[in-house]
Length: 447
Ligand code: 2M8
Image (tube, rainbow, N blue to C red; front, side, top):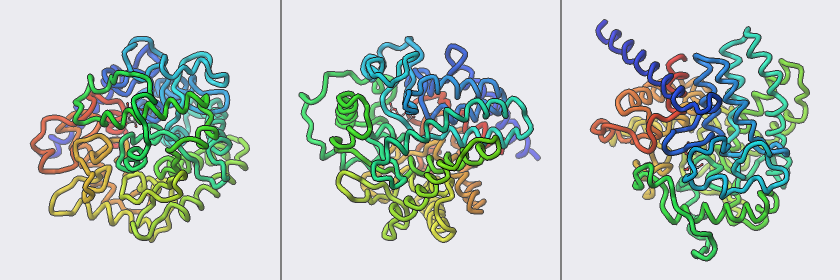
């Protein structure tokens, strides 16, 4: 009984704090920044999670989050990874002055944006909000009005990012993957031969706002800038960039998210009377190619494909597991993937599931950004995936361990996956009072 009381009071404290964070990170009453100190604009996939978080207590704000984000959508459907609504933080790098979207003809003219995109989580978030409110007229009306924007985004991928018509879209910047300095990109990044003359002078902003030991290296940043320069040179035209860029990758997480969102679009479209034939065709091809091309028996999981060097990036990394949420693997492959998650959680050296990168690899770093820590939104995606294949035990560990981390260490951007170490820490890593951490807490607690 005492335990129950304790949990109930912790839950209500967490819920209150999560709601407060989403409120505080809402700027100009319309959009949410990931973390007011570190990321002072609206970010693409963060806002998808944020909308879900808001849907638990304020549907209107949830819709506004989608709408404000899509204010940045380009004429060709591309949804930029940052929408620069606010002029508040001029010091941010790379800010609107750097990207210069206003010089691009097909870019959005109302608001400045970046020139790359991020994993399209929005359609499946909207479907989830509908599932939470199946009889709500406001939700239904919103879906009807918003559907065409989502469709335009999905068509953009197949028209501009899939030159071989394989159904697997490519990215040309590590930032687009959402997993900026993942070890997946290290080899590619290492071999890009740049000198200081190839990039303009710039000043990092992130390192002033968060502990540099938890952030990407300077060399990583130079490459990010170099690849942005390439984007600018080609006016952010995917096909042109792909011809020249050393970084052209068919990513696991990205394509799995796209497939899951395609499915959500198909379901919503059928229900609300939209034509979904084309997206059904795209999606069937994507699912098949993902399962055939990206699966590697030797890894026992999926791996991204480097189109420039025509080879897989053979590493055990968290993006592979998003395939579970997208329903891509058959039961046998899914069981194999989930066995690996269980294996990490049951080891003697005590990892919480799930580190973002293989703890047995020499590059693994439990403190450094995408090189090992646990990420809130990833745990949410994995939790859904495990449930999808009937692995409720693993799903519950993902959920409860994560809630415990936030309860003990605060609403941070990422967390140390080593149990023994996390137990001695007072806080998580990276930014604090983080929006998608709050959103994921709200959704997991409600489930
Ligand atoms: C991180 O990425 C930004 C660049 O987009 C950065 O490092 O400055 C990533 O974790 C990304 O997935 C996330 O959307 C963004 C904002 O939370 O931060």
